Amino acid sequence: MKLIGPFTQLLSLTDLPAKGGINDKELIVIPQAGVLVQGENIVAVGNWGELQKANLQARLEEVVGERVAMPGLVDAHTHICSAGSRAMDFAARNAGISYLDIAAAGGGIWSTVTHTRQASQEELTTLMLERMDRLLVQGVTTVEVKSGYGLSVTEELKMLRAMKDAASQHSIDVVSTCLAAHMKPRDFSGTNTAYLNVILKELVPIIEAERLAIRFDIFVEKSAFSPDEARPYLEALQKGGFEITIHGDQFTQGGSELAVEINARSVDHLEASEQEDIERLAKSDVIPVVLPGATIGLGCAWAPARKLLDAGCSLAIASDWNPGSGPQGHLLSQASMLATFEKLTTAEVLAGMTHRAASALGLSDRGQLAAGYLADLISFPCADYQEILYQQGTMPVAEVWKNGELVKHKL
Image (cartoon, rainbow, N blue to C red; front, side):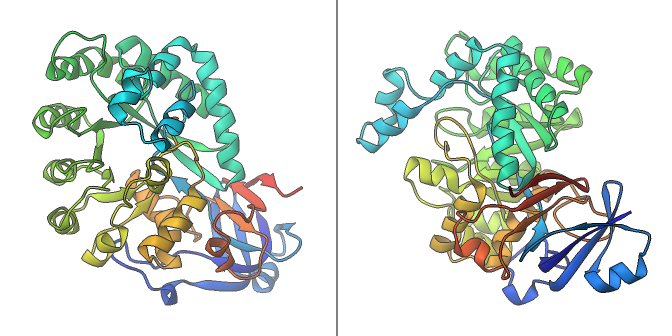
């Protein structure tokens, strides 16, 4: 066993509600704390001196200087397996050019599809590993990654295999999601339903055989797939044992209603959600995942995070790191901005990036610092946890421990 600390403050993020708003007074803040670890798991969390006296055989892994510790961040929605840049799209949007005109000029999702298809599996693995290095420095210890820029059986498999390769080479845990239903590819001559049937009949059996993903996603939107087209596809996947998440209510309604109907694990985006959508989600077990990075990248409205929480919903916060609408890829900065505009408490934001985000991925072994949980923790070089959001992502993470091992430390 080893004892990590002492931390000036430790936020365990335990004993917080799974749904609804959270008052900062509900945060458990342990002063002069330590974390006792055996293997990959936490054995105990408490006062450093008391843990040291009770565990004299434990090896000490001491930190130097003021530190605030908390669980490692969980980024529950990204697209970091991709190739190419969409800087042209960003500049064009800011210059007032419409999405349709950008797409006609060679931009949009199809631009990323083209570049990703041109990249080899090895190149995609390398690009993803570089992005995972950036995430680790930011304190992310678990990341969800979607396919969806291949849009054919062969190319989607290339992406999913690259994701599996990258996961095997990095300390961050990767949750792979198949988003072959991102849009109907331009080079597919059949209907939307015909394309979804190709995924079910030709792609899914290989994904199962190679264990490439346990989750599927679909973009429910006027420019992609309608709820009526998506419903039988998702129900077939659920019968096959896959978990479901939905890109929903980004520009128009319909996705969150479908998510509730089929009892999806989560519905992500929600910028276009109205009060009836919010009330429907509050009565369900579907976890809303809001993506402030897309708001920043597109210059659109924030997802109604405050209303979702006040209605009794859970709320996870993810970066949506992607080459088009969310190129920033810095979860803590984005969450800090969301908090300012949507008036979220520190507790709500931190929970949304840790145990509530883990729940959105179906993970119950991380996101809190308590006995039995994975020893995924991060520290910040400060004495007061309120500094973390106050500095809006500009304060660098000092140390990162993944499965109890120090994988990043301040030089």
